[in-house]
View (cartoon, rainbow, N blue to C red):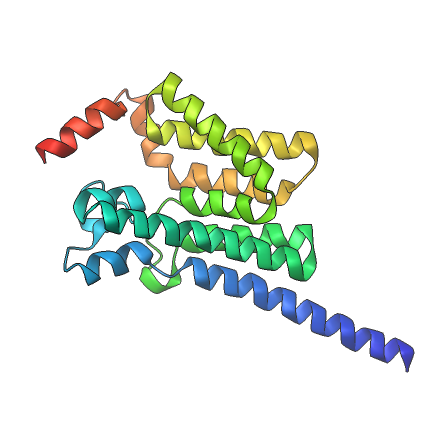
Length: 212
């Protein structure tokens, strides 16, 4: 009887963990950028501006307030999923749930698998599972902006650098490595543009957006 009872408890735990992981992807899939644009009566952000369903493009094409709202929503996706997973099943499930939210943000089932690039949700994921790593990531990103002067490249560099930190510290490695891989995939066209010398600096991008 004890073995049967223990097996039932384990089955329930595994079911909860699987539901948490699936729920994290579904929450990440909520297209906050598209919702903000629709509420404001503006075009799908994937068809205007930088054609990215992220907070920066929404801020440029809809308005600063909408951009901030999308940023907060995308951050909270990662924070809530990472924290819930951590609470339910510990470090590994926290990493899986945070990663699920990032995957949903990048490839949302509710928006034809065409979403944003996951940066804000990745930051939120780190806040949810390891706030200290989130601080390191923000500091790295800020330093990258000063040195590289390209927001996209600074973002990619910070997330990849954080993956290295997780490996060195042996903490939250699944999320660190997974988030870095998803980031490189989501930003592949931007990285190719940088290789061709076509990625604008922050000053150039702001100038072009003002003209637009």
